[in-house]
Image (cartoon, rainbow, N blue to C red; front, side, top):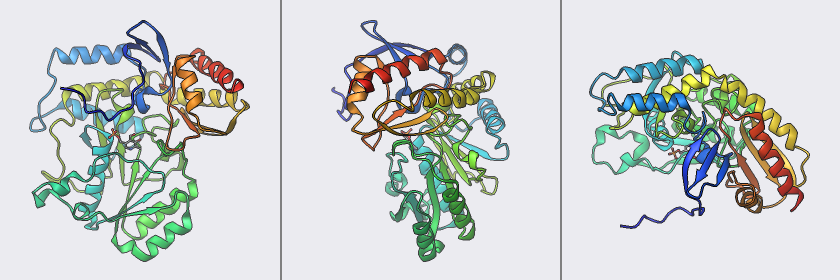
Length: 379
Ligand SMILES: Cc1ncc(COP(=O)(O)O)c(C=O)c1O
């Protein structure tokens, strides 16, 4: 059998990883400034993470959500404490897309409405309300029957108000990323987020903050929207949550009522996934990684801001978008093939996306800074 060929691949085969470095099958060492699409939060193979997962493998790896699982409770408690959202409830799943599917469905269950407002440049995952094609009306909410999704322009308050004025009574939820990642590190203005919150309250719509990429300390706050002191109704998370172990979460405001069978998953919240996620939170707390993300992010920006060919830098913590005066692919390839550094791109071809591990060290950032300088100066 061959693999279904959907990914354009670099001809690099990593076989080992530690901290912010990867090694390929020929022994070549790479610096990781992208974390495999924003996933690596506490560094590759952190010793605490490794030990905890290995120990758990000796005990139990999986049983379904039909039995008690103390690890899920420990995870919820620690996540509540570190994020400051102790009164929210947690539903565990396996990916960012699944977290968003559940958030949209939960919103629709909650208010019985079916329209969803989203924004230009957004990315929320690749599943498409899979329950629409599931032959069981009991687990499908109104939002699944029709695709009534309304696009509004990013950071455009006027358009947002006009849409709510016309269709507010039908809007079930508004879904917005804490910071748009795939869209090119686009930061919402505080006025924009505040207006969304106000309109959601006025029209009884649910505010869903997709923190799949911008959450888990990435922005220098536990969740990016917390900088603006906005209270979300539902927050979705994945990526950095498991540091590579697949896990997603939906953080749900206490006003939402749970009932048996409302949401569900086979693998979500399994023992290994919980241990991975607990280890991430332990390391984030013990090593002050949110603070480190703020500090290292500031340092990188201050060092690179005057480099040639950079038009603008958009950044919060270690979520960094470097907009060049041209397509960034040549720069990205030079960083990878001449300096052995992984970086990312975005839907905006000019934007280089930088997402190092939250425990990146200053000397590692210096490797990136001098490589970027050399690449940009030689363009
Ligand atoms: C903001 C955001 N939401 C959702 C997703 C989808 O997550 P997953 O690929 O785990 O389904 C992504 C993935 O890039 C993302 O960046």
